[in-house]
View (tube, helix red, strand yellow):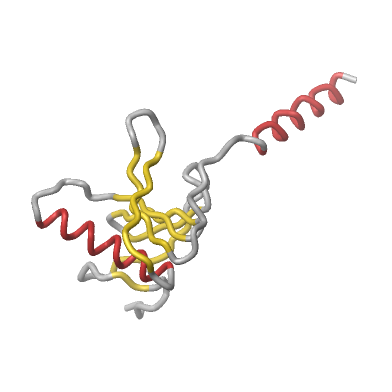
Length: 125
């Protein structure tokens, strides 16, 4: 009986964690956003450009990041969003996720000279 009650308690905890509210990006077609975290924990979505693919959105976000760094900015990592997907631009590459709290998956990697490439496109030595 005790084992059954522990099993029910564990199942209810798992069920409640599955219902946890997650932050989802806008799903607007072909719109690339620069996402800015606010002090209150919310996210502000700034329309950057209209592009046909997520790769083009990532490239535009990377160009914006580099331009800001050249002007004296210090923000190395930035966020973006494209068609219900978050983009996380980091030092080692660009990651994607369907929510801000969810797992991130590698989307583009940085080559030795800092360019972006599809994972597996660069030959191994």
